[in-house]
Length: 199
Image (tube, rainbow, N blue to C red; front, side, top):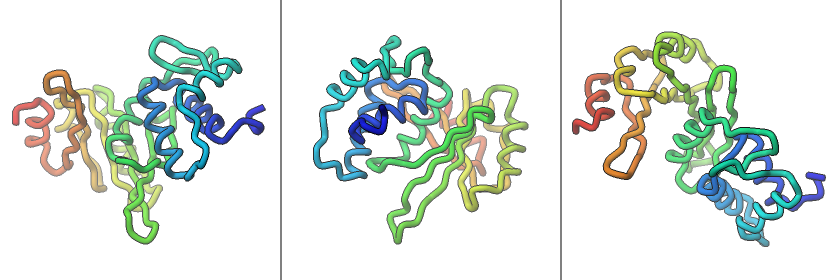
């Protein structure tokens, strides 16, 4: 059945399946970049694609999220995807998520001669800083990757380490707006100030 679907429908179904569920804002982000990257000539409206997939019983609405039937969104993956989306600008990244280690590997073009920057994002829960840091330091593949630590709070910064280039990622709220702060790993004191919004 999926093979007979238009490519736009197949892509949207695949991305929903990978994430467990996506809200319409994230669906639109992926859909727009897919259309651009694949240079799709006939592009149905996102709302139309969602409606058709829902009619076919391929996806269903659960609160704010479109999910595969009997599935729930993977909220940890969604947090990771938000970081990737913040770095990706208008390109569609390739990514691989490993649920057992809560790691997202994604690839962004460098803009010159087809090269890629590789990022390995680790979700760091409270109390797991040393374990995750050791895991990241031991990870050799993919070669030359940059480590990102997605933190719950600024207090975790002083407990992190890595033998590679790494950045701590904190979600900062200013008023009603939220954005990610990427802080180089060499300077934990300055990083804590930024995450706490003291600057």
